[in-house]
Image: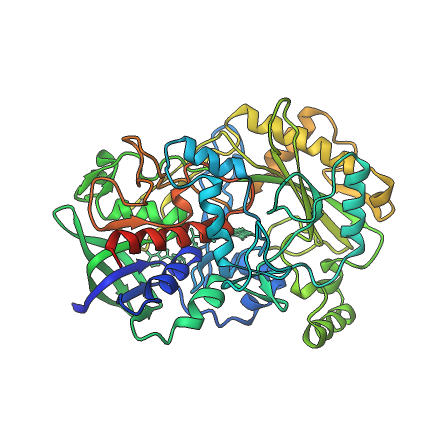
Length: 535
Ligand SMILES: Cc1cc2nc3c(=O)[nH]c(=O)nc-3n(C[C@H](O)[C@H](O)[C@H](O)COP(=O)(O)OP(=O)(O)OC[C@H]3O[C@@H](n4cnc5c(N)ncnc54)[C@H](O)[C@@H]3O)c2cc1C
């Protein structure tokens, strides 16, 4: 067995969070950092061209291709659960939408006992990471590693959708990440000059030359090594060899909401009875590891539209494909540079809700099966996303083998309120799509179809079509209670020298998308780690 020399920090997982930490922890030159990543380099051209997003759902070279357990009563289907297996992690394959969630999300984290995580506390870290195309202001930063850009050009369908939302009584909002989240407008993307700005592109690649940073791609972490309850290193597999890396400071697990609880459990931190079933020696009895899984469920309405201005038209016709390709190459404009949503909005639907509980996203493409063939006509999807689900699931090892996927049991829509809110959201979304401003482009609602109006029909459609927005969080929950997996400084309870820093630490799901919040978490963690080390 090969043993690498001692590092100050070993970061496991070069995803949204891991790349940020690799950058920040090596900046002073004082720390020797090893970054282990199971996936390979981000060389695939379609990773960098935003519309390539649609190609990654089925590519085993860059996607873990997980799937979740069917629900017992709702969403009784296996759902695809894509996760990036590549430098940049899921930020290399995601839909590029830049959304932070609501002020109240972070204030709730603070109210749950997590000192240092109120909105006022985390806003500086959102700003620190950001290179906002519109420039800096009270809510935004410029000059940071993460590029945040407006769509390269307006789109008639997006303009019509936003106007229709206003006609339906919603306000216009040109900055979902500013003073107010509610309202409708264009979304922003993590792109720079029409190319994806993953955390690999923004944070890692510019600093890979640093002599105190060692990056090991294709290195699958098997388990964390312990001396008693102190983390001393990581065992990993690379090119068929088992290797060990030793740490003097800390191991920082950044493998995401599915793999972080898996690695902790494989290393003996988790519910003892479950670990013993698989012959795993218990290092620390933490029954909360893998619990508290939360995710966004969405359900799209699909429309056939009158104009050949959708991505379906690019993908279905050679002439448009060539024209759009040339437009992208020479002008960095057009639909090749677009993220998963073009316009969107937030609204309140449940009686008495204080803040928006539904997100809408207008996608300029339509397909019946995710990652499958797109519809043969000009089509768009309008997604209704449930922002704060009450349903909870779990992630548990199902084998002692690190290469075996964990068992993902999301229990989507088990809380009846989740279904109620989605149905209310559907109806309000249809109100927007019935306005003349957008109606002029609509041939028909193709799925579920205008005749589907009753609760029964809409619930059946939700059952057959509901899917995840790919925002799992919460499985290594931060908190101050006995069940919490990490404390508010993200140190794993019950052991020493080990933190978790990624989407899994969120105590509750944010009311937006999860890439920007995960990057914020890693920015804040970097400061906490250096403070705690006195460096
Ligand atoms: C299809 C899709 C679309 C999305 N769209 C958006 C969007 O538009 N906007 C948005 O904000 N969010 C979006 N998200 C969600 C967002 O990208 C994620 O929440 C975020 O990237 C999670 O970051 P993370 O650091 O927790 O995990 P990840 O970025 O997944 O990083 C984990 C890393 O750890 C590596 N790893 C795992 N296990 C091991 C191991 N044993 N050893 C070594 N390495 C390991 C993985 O390969 C990966 O690189 C989307 C997600 C998906 C899947």
